[in-house]
Length: 177
Image (tube, rainbow, N blue to C red):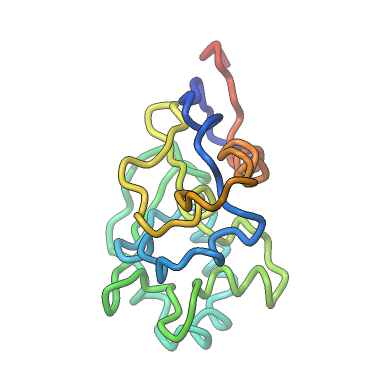
């Protein structure tokens, strides 16, 4: 499986507190980060299509309702392209309105699907990447668990997001292939 090349890592990833051991589910934010939808890697899109029947049952929407019509053309995503999810009822089309999380996370936990069915942007939050730089997102949700001052024992973002970082990226600080 192809990975995305990263040539630099922002220093604050090593100092900013990450999620507690409960992860995003410990946050009281009501999934505010889902209100804008997400960029879905082409590879993730293909996995979603493979499991469309289960996802449609969980969400009660057709898969076609979950995606914008246009691909981004940006090659720095798994599968070398991405497409945006739609926003339905104020949150990402995959978000479960009756609780925390989304249909894609449920596919991993309930149906034992690969974590790559979850878009990279979601798996990495509150990290993102742009032009080969792995960095903290510009506008972390105020209620996010990783900002909780009582979260003193938590590891830094590099440590808490390490599994996703290693799965999605190849870190090449010299910028040479």
